[in-house]
Length: 141
Length: 141
DNA sequence: CTTGCGCCTTAGAATCATTCCAATTTGTTG
DNA sequence: CAACAAATTGGAATGATTCTAAGGCGCAAG
Ligand SMILES: [Mn+2]
Ligand SMILES: [Mn+2]
Ligand SMILES: [Zn+2]
Ligand SMILES: [Zn+2]
Image (cartoon, rainbow over all chains, first blue to last red; front, side, top):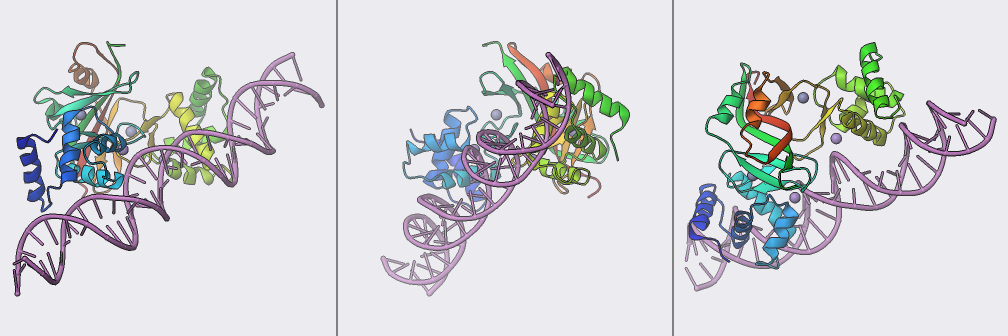
């Protein structure tokens, strides 16, 4: 159940690029996010990571998640009050929050959409990022 | 500094439509949101409302805000960990979060944009609402 | 190699926004 | 008025996150 080589490398590279170390905790946290991409909370990540590193602390999970977000390997997502969720999908995508199941789905965006959306900004507004969140239901209910 | 007649009416109408009462607390909370549209937190609303109703409690401010959100007179906005912010702008609009000043600006959206954006959803996804958040800086910095 | 030092992890305390609760108060209806 | 329901209130409780202080670990200089 170890991290796949290229992911481990990507991680190690990004970390050292920022003068940080590739620790076992960081690797396992990142691996857990890649393995099940269901936008888990820190608590959920904690529970999953414990299987491989039974002595890890919740504080470390928070620290690792924060580090991964800084390195831009992971996105922190907040679309409602309630715990932050974490997403390792680096492609441009929106989030669809199913109000029945509570689950969050990634919606891939066609190239140019984010630019199109950003073009509604008036003079003087310089957006570094755009986030799109849908709320509703899916056919499966 | 009282609420303007049509707003008071709109509020009373929406409330009674849901079987709720138009209380002084609810009126002043709504009025405060309309008067300074800077997306205040519950604490900030509390501080402003106290000027007119010095004995109001924070719990009541939370209750009133919740009620206004239920009546769809106000939107609760969450784009980051941190307190929920409240917006009385009912037109379709996006939010621009200025990372320097911390202020949030409303960006009016051209008609059809939200539909256009929603059209990227695959079969089976039925969105009830779409939210767009920009982050970046404004010319004024 | 060994030592020194800074990065990391850890457990638990502290913080902060929000929600919950139980006790009034207020408004409406008969 | 009397009764009942809706609303407000202050304070306790909750839950996610952050902070703090102590110890551990890895690497670079000697
Ligand atoms: Mn969390
Ligand atoms: Mn708040
Ligand atoms: Zn995602
Ligand atoms: Zn707004």
